[in-house]
Image (cartoon, rainbow, N blue to C red; front, side, top):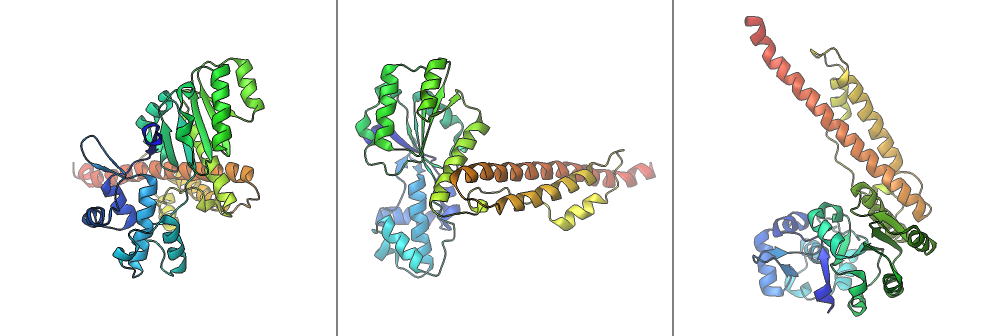
Amino acid sequence: MAEQQLQSRPLYGIGTVARLTGLKPDTLRVWERRYDLGASHKSDTGRRQYTQADLEHLQLVSALVSSGARIGEIASSERKTLERLVEACTVSPRAPVATKPHVIFVGEAICNWLDEHQGCLSGVSAQLAATRLEELDLEAFNDLGNVDLLVVGCDRMGSNQFRQLSELRQMLEPASTLVLQAGMSDNWLEELAGEGIATMAFPPDRAELAFHLTRSSAERATRDGINSLAELVTARPRLHSESQLAKAMKLQTELACECPQHLSSLISQLAEFEAYSAECSVDNWRDAAVHSCIYAYTSQARWLMEKALDLVLQSHEEDELQRPALKSA
C-alpha cells in the first residue's frame, strides 16, 4: 500500500549518479546486475531512476571500494553497517554523503506542481503522496522514520480534513508542518496557526517554499550538531577571483559608466558578507534557519552580480576586437 501511495523524489538518471558517486555508468550497471545494487525505479520507457536513498547508498559503497573493500563483501550490507565502515576508514567518500531533511508532500495538486519544478527538491529527500488529504490511507505512512517537514496541499479545510491532518501529524510527528491552501477561510487559518502549522498560498512562491525547506534543513543540521552555515547550504561557486575583480575595476569602457568598477566592488563586498554569514554563531534552529537563508541569498546575489560582470567583460572584449577595424576604416 505504501509503495502505491508514496513516491520518492527527486529521481536521478544514471549519468547524474555516476557523477555524484565517481563510478562509471558501466560499473553501476554491472553492480545492479550482479549484486542488486541499483535503481529502485524505472521510467515508463525503462530508464533507471535512482532515489536519494539509492544515491546515498551507492556513495557509501563507492567510498568503501575506493578505500580497498571488496564489492562482493559489502554489496549486501545494510546502510547502517556501511556508515560504520566508512567512519572507520580514513578515506572520505568521493562525493559527500549528506543527510538531507526528510520531507513528505501530500496532495495531488502540489505533487503535480513539484513534478514540473523538481529543482525545488534538490536539497531534500522527499516522498510524494499524490492523493487528497481526506482520501489518504494512513496505514501507508507507518514506519517512515523521522520526518522533518510535512507539506500538505489542501484546497479547502473542513472538519474531516482537519481531523485527517491531525491524525497524520500524530502518526508522523514531523518537526514542522506547512499547509498550502487556496482561499481557505480566516477561521481555519487561525485554527491552523493555533496548532503551530504554517500556511502558504497555492501555487507556492518558490522562494518562500525554499525558505521552509531550508529551515527544515537547518533544523536537522542543528540537531545533528552542525553549527557551520557553510555546511547547511550549498553556495554558488565563485566565478571571479579577487585579482580578476581588481583588474575589472580598472577597465576603461566605451560607455560613459562605471559598471565594471561598481560591480567588482559589490561582488567583493557580497563575498565578504557571504563568508561572514557562514561563520555566524548558531545556537538554536531558529537562528540557523534565518542565517542559512541569509547565507543562501547572499551567495545567490553574489553569483548573479558575477554573471552581470561577465556580460560587461564580454562587451568590453568585443569593443577591443572592433576598435582596430574602426581605426583602419
